[in-house]
Length: 468
Ligand SMILES: [Zn+2]
Ligand SMILES: [Zn+2]
Ligand SMILES: [Zn+2]
Ligand SMILES: [Zn+2]
Ligand SMILES: [Zn+2]
Ligand SMILES: [Zn+2]
Ligand SMILES: [Zn+2]
Image 1 (cartoon, protein in one colour):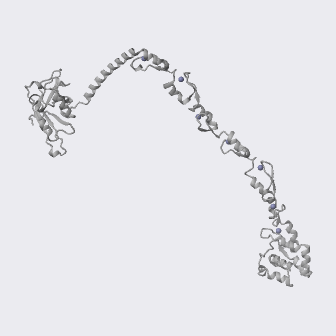
Image 2: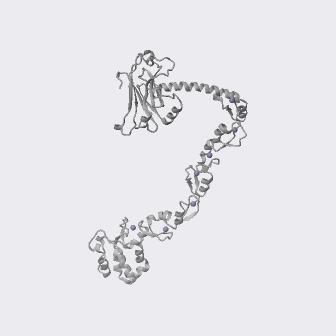
């Protein structure tokens, strides 16, 4: 029964070129035709037996015997075995076609027939691929590692490849060297030119082959003082400060060099020099002071010239007035003077003056204000006597401008008055103005004084001939 099933199985796929199909009078042959639908349709691409094993099972002697038992009719058997069939690997490309009886012999040489791997790995390998399989893919193949020369079976070799300790590989630090894998960590730790090493002086890390260059400039490399002083070892970066501030052998200039002392000597001798030359240093310093005083004076002149007012109008700010008033009460004739100003760029040089405690008819009761003509740069070119109108304004500093009420006094000079003639080079204390400009009582009213400060405007007007 078993064999019948087996035969049925292979006959299902066995194919016959249609024109030479066996004549079928017997039941079993009819059976073949019945289970081969493509044949019954007269197809030109008949079905195929799938495996050699199935054929073997049928065609070996014992099987034939069995077949004989099942199909005792030798006529039928002969007819079947004479049928012309394709190789079972027709689809894979085998062109063989012959009598069925010759199929087994063909399959032994058919390039497309699969055989079990001869190394017994269990795989079915087409005959054409067997050589390749045995050499490269069979897990049971024997192979040597190119690097360590040990023998492996295929599978263990695959695990070994990429891990062999003897395989030379490039160092990961990109030093360019190839080192056997087993020596790599030792190489990277101890020999690799691209490994990182700490500088032994500053502890920063450097690529090994640049360390020597770094040592040439590392600030922490110990050096001796260039003056060979007794200082213990210095770091290179400290030398400059050492020479400048600490080295006892550094040659220094005397501290009074700028004043003119020419002494030079090592630091340790300086104290002695200073002690022994006090007098000389003192007189050098006195010379410096005198020279500087002259410089200051000429700077002051230059500055006052720069800050001179040429507008003809002076706004005179007098602060700390309370203390000035208090001083004036105790000091007779105490006078405040304004910065000098010019009536125009090449005009008259004027100065205002103010007596907080009054002067003349205003003494003790009023503030007096005056204008003085000072000797100016351009007096030689100006018209004399001075004839411009002069006005004094004391500002009411009320926060509300509409309510402010300023005190204004002005005059046109009297040409006969001596004070308006060209002044001599000697400063003249004589002025012209208002001894009773504003009373002390009035000063307390309104907002003439704010933050202990008053503002007086002195305005010189060459066009006005009428005083307001
Ligand atoms: Zn074949
Ligand atoms: Zn194998
Ligand atoms: Zn190896
Ligand atoms: Zn390396
Ligand atoms: Zn360093
Ligand atoms: Zn030194
Ligand atoms: Zn000196």
